[in-house]
Length: 165
View 1 (cartoon, rainbow, N blue to C red):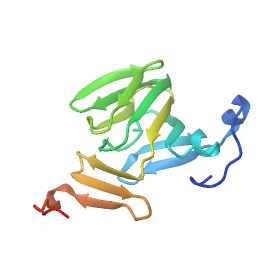
View 2: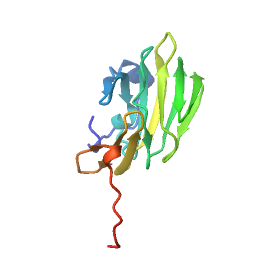
View 3: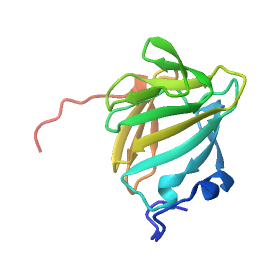
View 4: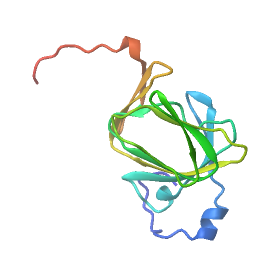
């Protein structure tokens, strides 16, 4: 269900969640970053943050290595094992571990290093504006409500010295 639509559902029962098909997603900048996503927050009309159950197959990543400047994100591992890459560090994470990615913090991603499906809860803010970097690719993305996303090469970003408005 698209965000912003009127939703009158407040409760999803366990059986309903288990039977949800989920949406297969592949990151537009990383074909190895593919997952199955169940967006429970969308199904109950949440708009300020996303609440997702994700599944990542062995050898795949949850997303492209990235950071947000204005949005917090977090991950709680339900099943499986993964390598969490956070800035220059790499950590083995497993069921019961929590990762908090604060706005403006280090870039991050997860790679399923186990031999079973990695299952996680992912929660992230949904602000009207965000800026994100993809450091491995030298890219920056600008997202603003009501406008198309803009993806630019970081080497081409100019920072003019402007006066006051």
